[in-house]
Length: 113
Length: 113
Image 1: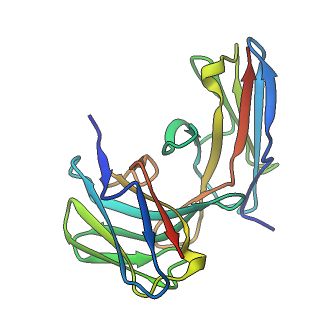
Image 2: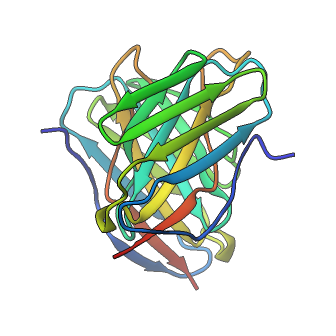
């Protein structure tokens, strides 16, 4: 069964803190994605990775960075958290050549105070 | 103009009726179109995809695509309370090195018993 897990369901951080969000998939997928979801704005792509150590910016990369040292793990890093980064963060993965059929993790609700 | 637009709803239909969800997109080069379902507090899951003009049926779901009008819809026949969810329309963006999937803001559907 397809499985994407995220390190936390809920996270509360203070402004200026460095935040790590972890995502792990057990399907041997090449592609991995990080989105944020906000009411009225839908899912917006932050970064994606199509291979280990490979990454490309999505539509809203500012304030974020990513790391993919192993195929199954994709991390999202907020270098200095700000209140406008309060959101639901969703990780997804998909097999090579099927970037559209994305499997999502349960999400992390991040609140920055 | 947003790349993918949907009525936010909520759309309310009685049990057993046909629910019609609509989506318009701005990129004439988009080639692939998807519908994801997202239950409250859960992550999105792919339910339909369509690549060619016309209708595609899968059980109680029918996806309709009209590329000339840049319009894609999802019909749910014999709606059930379990269909109550937010439905996300997604399209691929053309002309990039990677065919990114752009999500709409979603339409909330409520099926009334």
